[in-house]
Structures are given as C-alpha cells and as structure tokens.
Amino acid sequence: MLVGNPWPLINPWRTLFDSFSARARAGRPEPKRFQPYPARVGAWPAVGLLLGFYWFELIFPFSATPAVLGILIVLYSAVTWAGMAAYGPEAWLANVDPFYRVFDLFSRFAPLAPAKASGPEPALVLRPYAAQLLQSGQAHVSVAVACFVIAMLAGVLFDGLLGSGHWTTVENAVHTLDPKLGDVGWILVQTAGFLILWLAVLGLFLLTCALMAATAGGGIGTLDYARAFAATLIPIAVGYHFAHTFSYILIQGQAIVPLISDPFGLGWDVFGTRDYKIDIMVMSTKTAWYLAVGAIVTGHSVSVYLAHVAAD
Image 1: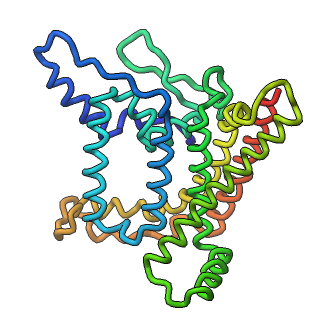
Image 2 (image 1 turned 120 degrees about the horizontal axis):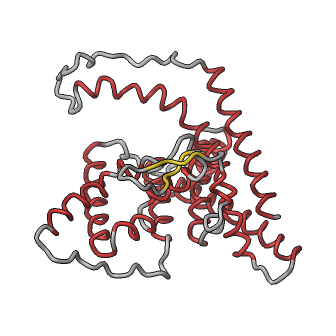
Image 3 (image 1 turned 180 degrees about the vertical axis):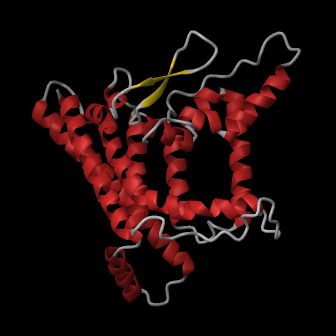
C-alpha cells in the first residue's frame, strides 16, 4: 500500500511452480502450451475466495488451529498448482488467487512500480501516490474486480463491526428470539451478517452509479460507472486496512522473534530469542488512535479527489 508490490517476488506458490516447471521442461524442445482461461469466468473466483478467506478468518471458530490451517494450505496449494499448470500462472493468479489480486490493487496506490529495464536487473519507477488508479488501461476494471474491491472494504468493516456495540445489539436481538441458539446457529448468524454487509455496501455503490447514469445520460449504464469508479474506492480500503492492522502488526508482529528460535514449539532456542516478550508499549494508544483516524480521513479525501478526476 505504502511502498510497492512485493508479492510477485515472494509468492511461494508461483516460486515453487516456476522452479518445478523449469526442471520439468529441461530437455524438452518446447514448453507446454496452456489452455486459455475462460473469459466469461473472469475474476469471479477471486471474489468468492476473498469472501471465503474473510469468513474463515473472522467467523470460523477453528481458524487458528494449526491442523486446520495446514489442511487448508495443502488443499489451496494443490488447487493453485493445478490451475497454473492448466491455464498458466499469469491467468490463474490474476483471476483466481485473491492474495495476488489484493496485492495488485493495493500496490496501485503505492509510489513504486516495476518498469521495463534494458538491462537484466528489474527497474522501478517512482510516481505520486494513487497515480496508477487513474492511469489509462488501469482505471476501468471489470465488474468482478469492482465487486472484489467492495469485498475488501466489507471484510475490514465487518471485523470492526464484530467488536462494536452495534453487533452486540444484533446478538442480543437474536438471543431474544432464540435463547438456546447453538454454535452452528451463531456461525450462520455471523455469516448472514457478513454477506448482508457486503451486499449492502455493494448495493449502495451500484445505487449511486445508477443515479449518476440517470442524471448524466449519454447512454452510459450503471455497470459502466461502476467499472469506472471502483478503483477510486481503493484509497478508502487502504485507509481502513492501515488503520485496522498497523498497530496489530507492530505488536503481534513481534511474535516472530521467539518463533525464529522455536518455530515448531519444541522448546528450541536456536538464536536465543525464545523467551522474548512482546512489548505492548511499542506504540502508545494515543499515537495508534491518531494514526488510525488520519489514515481513514486521508483515504477518504484521496478517494473523493480521484472520483472528481475520474468524473471529468
């Protein structure tokens, strides 16, 4: 969001796929030809998988269980490698992998971007923040990507909603209707709440686009406006995600220090950092609050500016 996109370099699925593909092609006169990715499907699989990821993170009660995480990673890896083998890594990752898409959209806000270089080393270009969001060929996205951007907003909004008094009110109302609601029932309630929130934000966005189309005329439809203005919402997503995760990364991110010495919980102390204690005062609550509010206000301000530019 704030620097550039490292995912193409650190993506473990792409790295392993390229490594084994290179070995498999050794000695062959011509590499395997990939079949074309179905255009009608587009990026809709990435939308579904992003919603599924948020559901697993925020609602599924066993999301932090190592065995469950391991099984899901193995399954996701198998599907990803099979898809890349069939359709090619570029087409599969761009349309199906939600992590690839999230990094790509956030990095369009960032000031650093790769550029074609004459030498063997990759080059970077420096640009103003959010400049690529209105760049020719990047400003208009598909309807699926527009829904993906809304899902990015809905995920972090629902995470905040779960810890608010508003959600407590919803839970109290549900408890009044069914005092003996079981765990499965509460999962269904939260799932419904998440989907309703996503559809509500998406509906408001499309309603605004419909009003714009009706007001402006000229034969430009609602979905055309949605495709043109979806990218202008990315700064809001940047602001929300920064506000929501920055202090969490600073504090909980310190857990990597003891894990470096004892990654499997076997009592190792390889680098002498096993007993490191997380410093919760690395950032004061006041500083975190100001950063969060500043990020949200800045994100909305940039988004409004981009929307005005896009409208012109």
